Image 1 (cartoon, helix red, strand yellow):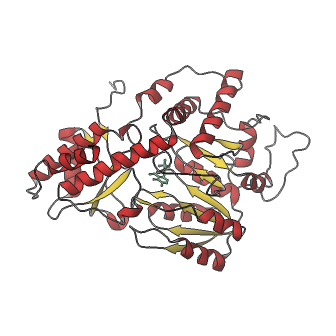
Image 2 (cartoon, rainbow, N blue to C red):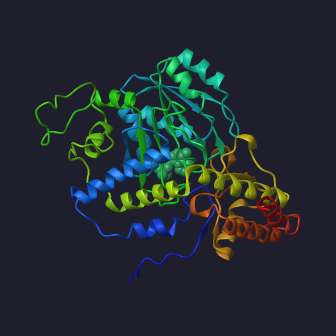
Image 3 (spheres, helix red, strand yellow):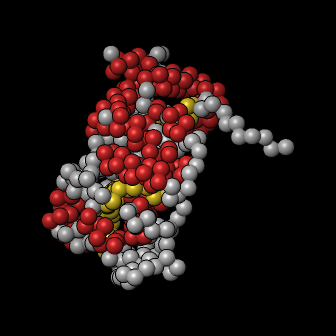
Length: 403
Ligand SMILES: Cc1ncc(COP(=O)(O)O)c(C=O)c1O
């Protein structure tokens, strides 16, 4: 007999997903209503308003794409890019490669610039490439969890305006835990997910679009047969995905309430609560909280005598890559943390696999007790491998940060 779902208790201290805030899970157990119930459409409008605060934008077009974070990325790119359009992707980790992969599937002409993993791009390097490639879209990740780096964005919007380029940003891993300014930085589209600093489960992708991005996408609107009305003449190159067609999804969330997908109501409740909690806390306060606990984890692992990967000056607040000490089997040590202590930390990808663990302090888990317990448990697991460690050095260093 297959029993009911009864997961083990875990403390999720990897690069995401992390434990959802219990208040988000409670919101997700609320009853369903019909998708055009006035209460539901009002709740959708509230969700749009909350995410305008989270993204720091006045963009009317701010809503949810149903699906995990990459649904948001794919919706943005497939709705912007027509076959043959040039797109420039600065790649500084795995998720830059994901933008390339998605843009290629849109049959765009994809150009890249790269820096070694563990570094970010100076704005001049991006501008040089923009001058050379003359792309329609510059697509960039803010925080790449694969390397823990946080790409500075403040100058990129200005560069894109100067060269008449649309700027897309994947803020999945960074939003809510690192400064993010859609309007002040001149971003045209930004997308995110819930399972990192927003403290929810994965499955919903908040998105915001500037008026000029919305106009470009609206210029490709082909309303589906069967719901088309007078005035719905097809325009431009049809967007290659129906489900992720932002031109139609904007009309679904907008006053027209044009029928598209059936909104994932339970995810909407969760996404709304994630944003509500952040706005209630204050975005700046939440970013400071992530900075504090991130610093405590960073100093904690250093206090144990472990090395940290990458340019720490440009590290996201919410995740640190810790060098696996010589002689330690990284995956076995992670398994020991999980089975003996119920704590999950992250492995890593590509060139970093087997070399670093990634430890997160984000969302609901950007908390003192979560940091201290993780450092204490890590010390015990490494001790079993005979790694020379400063006894109690991790917890003590973190506590010094808190003091
Ligand atoms: C920066 C970044 N982009 C995209 C994704 C993909 O998100 P999802 O797994 O929710 O589709 C992740 C997930 O870790 C991420 O860190």
